[in-house]
Image (cartoon, rainbow, N blue to C red; front, side, top):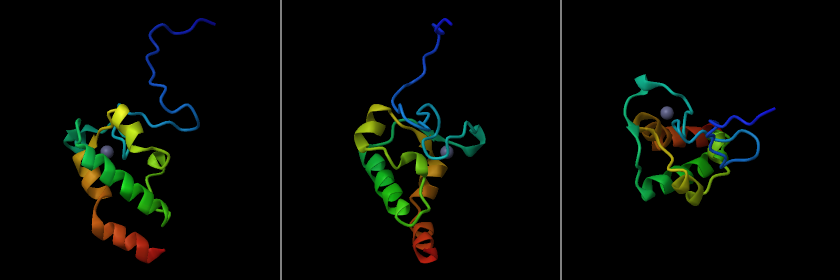
Length: 102
Ligand SMILES: [Zn+2]
């Protein structure tokens, strides 16, 4: 067995399902119809997303793939996302609903 010389796989997450940082961090879908992809989110945006993921995790409605990430991880990985996914994920009303359901 030879190693694929072209295997340029990002090996940031070594365990279990690793996030594919080349795709939208939130939905992990390569779906162009989802609109604009934010390629260089601001640091505050990363922090906000992480806060919300942590918050949602506590009500079991989280984006599971991100729960083990730190700001450092996603900054180094240059995480990106669809603008629509981000605004959906950070939508206070849906977050509120998730809390109420719990
Ligand atoms: Zn997305």
